[in-house]
Length: 485
Image (tube, rainbow, N blue to C red; front, side, top):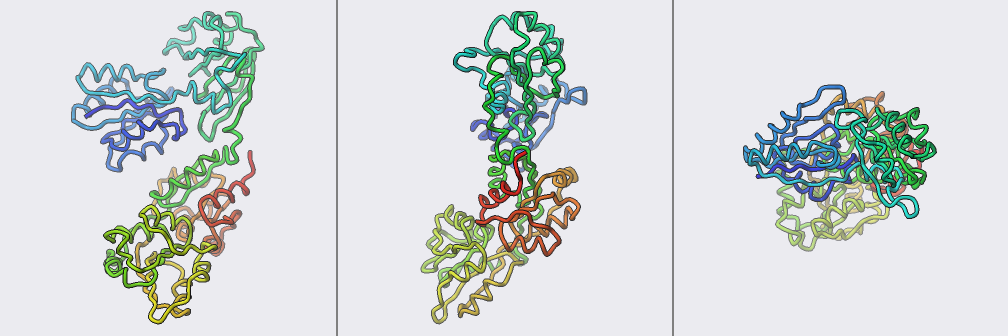
């Protein structure tokens, strides 16, 4: 077994390396610091032990010797251990000390490099570290001198090197740094860009000059870039359509990732607040198993959610069990869930609601039968409409939904968000049950008319509804409802 010293990157979870994700996925223990993004911990198996050893500036901290001993202890126990560190484990971090402790103890280890904030944060701030005609090199320096203050670095010599200067952890000592760089020959007019919380939705960039750096309104954590390249403004991240916005995702945890990824791609911060969870049918799945055993005897099998697909298909030996039965899906999301199991939907309506599927459904032949595996609580318009058209319809309970109990801090974050997204009627009811009307953000976004109707019936004002009832349509509606900041 191995201890992996993994660089988590500067904040954006998308900057975790493929190798880092691989070792997290099989970890028995994750020892993480304060700068690690919480969502990265979800990449580890649910049963993995998660141990926080975060260091808080001027606050409680886990001594480095204790962290070293912890890694050695878990490594000697024969466990797969991931030490998840912000940025890169060997760039202004204590990864070298941890590696040395493991080596001295005879514990196998591997270093998984991470994307350092020295490079990533300026890039997200629109500042290239090198640019033709402006800088052909860059120097990365810590601003706290390994705990000794800025005086531990020969800043006059740094000024004489030329190129771009990148200062990490230098907000508190920026006045002294500026004075000494000026003394080293840099002009007071030298451009400076400081990027706080870089690569995260709360990112904020302050632009000033070396002469104005001491008085600039800066807060930690920030990466300070000094040099002619800091005069360039190639901002892209802060211009994303949902940058700086906080959006609540209420989908069940196992389904939230697809919507979270789309929102983050638009620059939004997300609050994952799964208000419902998917559980077994009341009969433990007996009726569903019985239906699956004779699925080939039906003319149509109709799915109205990806959850129903996920519950039903594993009960079949393979797709051949459908026999001559055709398959209908209420929309592209459900059709995609079928396609991932190598089942192609024969029918997907133009309107992704029960009424649309009912309108598109073919007329029956004598004795025609339809199997409809679905949630325990659902609208009856589809089965009643099919029966009215002459089909024999067997409705089988595939799953139930029940409210979750989010942590108080998650509820507080949700209440302070800019918007909340709902992808089903059950998620609306679940949110109001656990959070209440007072914790509903100003903008309510719905995936379609059925969900919107439920929200309005429960007292909410729906500000955005997807024109196309998909996750992409929901994000598009949210972009229209939330103007850029």
